Length: 481
Image (cartoon, rainbow, N blue to C red; front, side, top):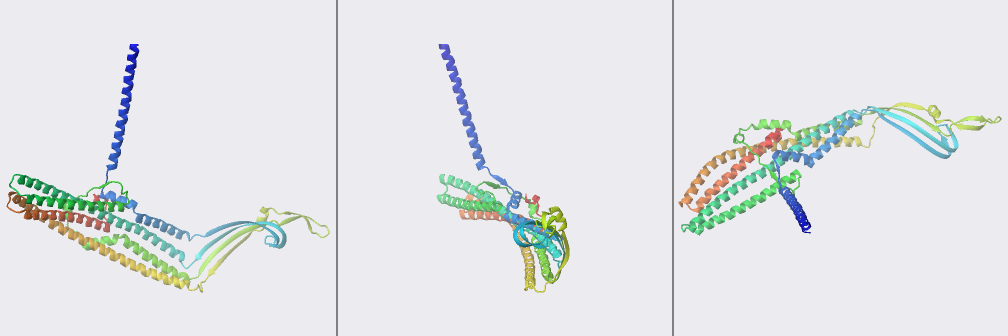
């Protein structure tokens, strides 16, 4: 009995250990799963400038719409080529009728129930239509080319918007970094001043001054963080991404040598921009298409010449062979319907012809069409002029902004060296008690202002350079990293 109890106790212990191990494994797996879910929920998706541009180009609705329009224009261009081919139509019919009627197949009046059918083929070819098909084909080709350039123009606009938003985020982050460094410096000075005050050699006024400056600096950082959040949301919306996810926009970097490179002459940059500009090319293609449209309207007064050919046949239940006649009156006594194959061969008919059309009076439709085409041509000329003005203004503005950014960068870089030296000197004197707090704070503010101007000028150079690269068609993935 004792042996059995011992065996039972041993079994019970092992069973309990097994259950405990199972429970611990489940708890461990649950904790790991929760940890992975939490990690995924807080994981940030890192995006570079190049990736942002690629995402925008894939998701942008204007670009997708322009591509759809290009597909439609390409189909219209193909159809304009097919318009030179002859047309061919086939037809067939089956009919039932009852009563007095004229049977076309037998060529006589009948008063009976009639079954019939027919088949036909018709072909037509335009020999001359006032060059309408030729001009339409040229017009559709130009419209197709214009639609392709519209895609490129929308790509340019999208790239510019993404670059502006992205560099605005990076610039704000740099400002936050400067503000954070300033806050750290002020906290250090506050700790030092509090220690001096506790030692009895300082004053609470200085402590309060530092606390006030730290509070203002924190407020400035909060404003910058709000500005950063707004900029990031704007870029996320521009990319058509899920705003509920977390994103980290990686910074862009460049060497001082690149920032200080000599600029090209404006004329050289503008010449390349003008040669590449998709919006300009689209306007030029649209203008040429409008000229073709006017020519089509003007040629609507010309005559047209077409050729046609036809073949047809039919059968009827009234088309019969006489099997037996009355010996006296010779009236049919017994008949049978001729089979449809024989009828088709017997009733076959063919035809061909030429048709000449001369528009003598079209209720002024041709004249109205010419007037409308002239107005469209004038508008196309104005659109081309506007596209040239827009390109000139955009390139001039980007070039001037780049010049200003480079000038500011050079001045801010030199100023920052002097202001850093001045600040270190002021901090040493303040800590030794030879200058007051206001003088020290002014030196710090001057240093912060110089840091901000340098960062602003640095990213201003990068932004304007990339915008000019977009205008000249020289933007490549290697330039965005």
